[in-house]
Image: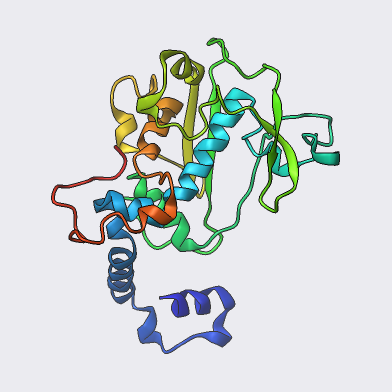
Length: 257
């Protein structure tokens, strides 16, 4: 399938014999590829956790970090002079936009794990996902509080500033949040756009889990709760959790709930 798509993208001089471009044949190949690569994400929580859970967990952590103004929204990666928190060109101290590169298989795995890729074909060239965080301005939030920092060891061992973690949500599972912590997430909504098309997560269709009138706007609390179920605490340990059990779960574990 990659070869066929590559020749279509590069022009007539690279074309294969016409039989390779038969519409029905390409649909069959696409369906086989989609089922082989991504069906597991729809059926198994373990599959989701090991395949793309760490990435989704990082995205949720950044969004929650933005809500808490903790620096975990990506600001710590920006850094600054002598470890101080960095600032944008306009002097801002908040991360408003972050971009990551990935593969077509990453896009489909993420959307499949969230139950938002039903009936889709293999991602085409230039495909992308936008994960957007919105705030209802009528709901009071925590976004303007001052960041409190403490020294921590970075990835390479150098000391840098980090937000104090004692009172932060970070990757704490939604089910373990206190009422005060859950209140911080109120008034925030998450929307997925795949190639500029809004995608709806099944679990966000439920009453109270989305913006009134638009099911594609999932409440941040609901989105986090869905993501938490397949976000690994320690990825290397998660790899060895089910070595003595069957590969397929005993009960259905549908994605997006």
